[in-house]
Image 1 (cartoon, rainbow, N blue to C red):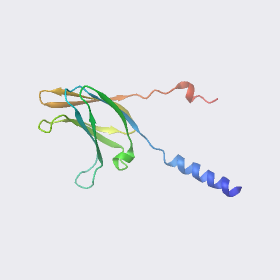
Image 2 (cartoon, one colour):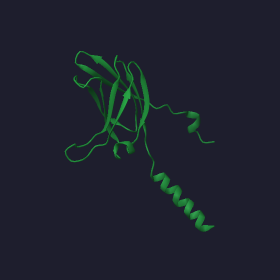
Image 3 (tube, rainbow, N blue to C red):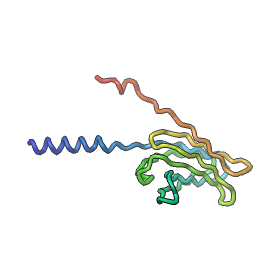
Image 4 (cartoon, helix red, strand yellow):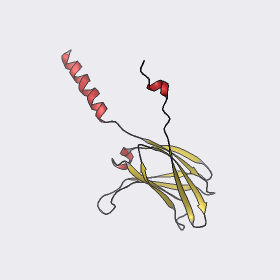
Length: 132
């Protein structure tokens, strides 16, 4: 009985230590073409291999997904870049954090694709945070 209680206590303590954050991203593609979005961990490209992931967003549509440190090789800071065409420059939004939620809008302009990131404040349910 004591071993079981000790084991459960250890498991509970370890689970508290491994708190994982996930930032939710809503990507809005205002372009008339599909958008390739590259999410890449931020860091020194000369000294380390940075994790990245590519997601395709259809034309004139939006998509939601989570970005977690596990997707970024354990890093918490990342950038998101959007391209509709390999021959025109795509813009990127930098210094995003997995602890925050963002609405990222990609628009078409004369020079290529522009990126606008807006941090979305997380809504806290006051009733859920009260102790009963």
